[in-house]
Length: 198
Image (tube, rainbow, N blue to C red; front, side, top):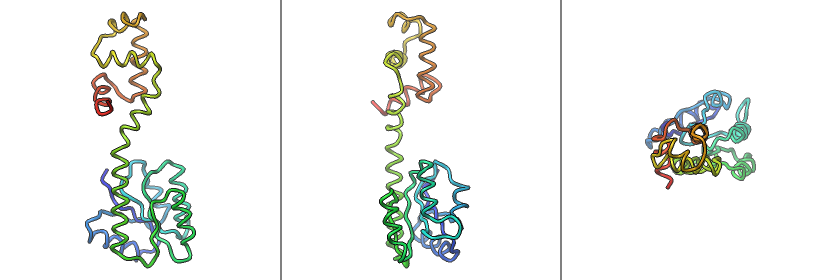
């Protein structure tokens, strides 16, 4: 999924202005008229950043931010705040928002911050696979690790059973559990998954 700036603002003029602004700087974007509309389209694999108005009719930007945090969203959020909203925006940054920009904003400064947020998201995504693999590996029992090392060495179930003095059926059970925990379907996939983490 390509990274884009996701604009959520209930003011059509601001949505249009931001869409044009991002286009002028070659930043892909998409706009939503409300927090509810964005939430309906939200998926965990969205990339880029979220440019979010603090105050909107219906669900506020802050409420949307809280909901996304509850759902485990890691999409960087930049709040657009009016002068009276600055304490709210500062509080949101303390809770994990990427930044806030006060209205009226400097066009280029806003785009620069959006680009930084998108770079931050890309860097996090690039680092994530290694962390995810480490989490999966941590779920394996010591015996499953022993079996996995032998699977990766290309040994057959019977050889593994002999080396570990266990029944071949037990090796098959371990193999199935290893594949399930690691999220792979074959020894080849397992080797590919781990090749970048050794």
